[in-house]
Amino acid sequence: MPEKSNIVLIGPMGAGKSTVGRHLASHLHLPFVDSDREIERRMGVDIPTIFEYEGEDGFRQREAAVIADLCSREGIVLATGGGVVMRPENRECLKRCGLVVYLRTSVSVQLRRTARDRNRPLLQTENPRARLEELLRIRDPLYREIAHLVVDTDREHLRGTVRTVARRFRGRLPKPDKARSRTPVSAPE
Ligand SMILES: Nc1ncnc2c1ncn2[C@@H]1O[C@H](COP(=O)(O)OP(=O)(O)OP(=O)(O)O)[C@@H](O)[C@H]1O
Ligand SMILES: O=C(O)C1=C[C@@H](O)[C@@H](O)[C@H](O)C1
Ligand SMILES: [Mg+2]
Image (cartoon, rainbow, N blue to C red):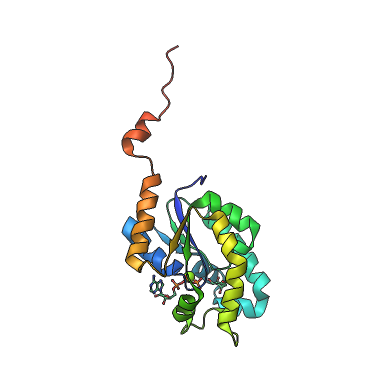
């Protein structure tokens, strides 16, 4: 069970983690943090540059450090990078960090949503479809391993996804009355 009351969005490139995350945070009046943007902010360069100079391994090390830091926060909506589940320590950390939501998406929709964006080094290949299929084959079981909720973003539009996650999140928060009745009452001496 999660130890903290955050919302963590996981899923492949183009699933909509950053887009859904921003809308969800504004809907719930919570701060929004995107781990990809946080890595770029700390490094002062963009993700393609980190891949160019440090390789994917270097990027993953920086990502793990950022995830560990962000998971110590409380009450945030956290959009993660598509490959965050590759490291077991990230999976452990995220599971405890809050409600983990897997935004599931087909490869065809991922391709459409990422076609114009050059900011994803793993897609700078001759055959992005084959790359996305291979990544999904490896990662889908890992996303599912830590997800508390799976939302199909091919079928649900943006607003529907935000509502579904918000409803589930609110359902997990203790109601004010119930919270009071759970407060331990000390026995008379
Ligand atoms: N539910 C949706 N319906 C239609 N378009 C969407 C939806 N979610 C995201 N998009 C569009 O798809 C593109 C990619 O979305 P986004 O950047 O949020 O994906 P991501 O999961 O954060 O990817 P990455 O792992 O690479 O950071 C954006 O242009 C966004 O506007
Ligand atoms: O799927 C991935 O491995 C990645 C997804 C992006 O969010 C970035 O974290 C980076 O481009 C790597
Ligand atoms: Mg993103």
